[in-house]
View 1: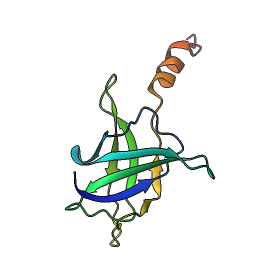
View 2: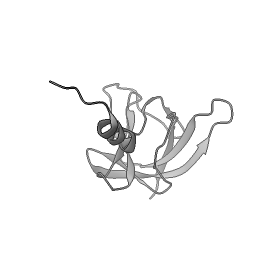
View 3: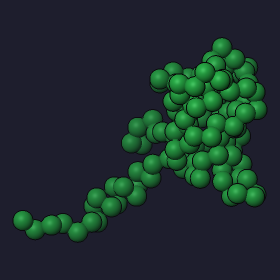
Length: 116
């Protein structure tokens, strides 16, 4: 895919992988180009390539989402309302980490039950 690159720095990428989809409103608009660790902050650094026809506001939020309970993960972009657009090489500062589904299920299964 040709386009421009942007980065995001979530604290965790969960099961996100290189070449995973990047979507807006459920439609693919790009892909994950590279996953690295920032040696200074220890945050993940996700580089994405976005279709050049898609212009993203600087207030766009990145959310790592699952395709389904047992599916792969992808990067969901939730465009904000800001009028200033992201440029090539810019960083999307608003991030939401991947949900730990296994941890949530374990918590439900192994949490103490209340007696009524």
